[in-house]
Length: 230
Image 1: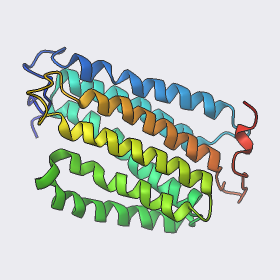
Image 2: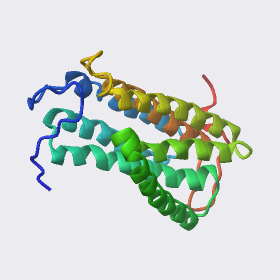
Image 3: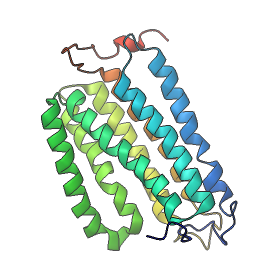
Image 4: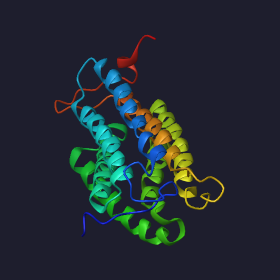
């Protein structure tokens, strides 16, 4: 791979200059805001949830990596964008398996591997139809799927996942419409993908923290106990 190869995937970019995508680049600040809000919630936890803190750090990396991609617009910068997103998706899925559904760690890992394999097949099938947005459809389906499985086990977690899933579906629509709407909206719609996804990540992290976690000692937290008060 030629890491220096220029990439032009979005409506807003008309040349190879650093600030050719100002809206797409600046809108990545939303991810940093998401990370800050999530960190403030994390600091309120009665017991520090280190896996969630790791995901918050990944959200920072998502914002920085996406900023690099929408400014440098090279294959190397694209990896800085893709890798943190993938880390969040699979890291969150594994935690969802163990915390929301109560699977043992090894079963959660097996489910995550199965999700990755099934997702790669689905992406190949749908890529000719929806283009690069197909890469996010497995995550969208997983959010709703896990939400449905949580309905009887943890209604609040299910509701959080459903809200995040609806927002994610809307943000994915904006991402998909970026090129088709270019003639009518020259700035493109990709920046809305960033803004809404930052909200999605905040909701997902808050839902994970509210649900509590099963620590190595087998401790359980009741839903909502860490968020008592205003």
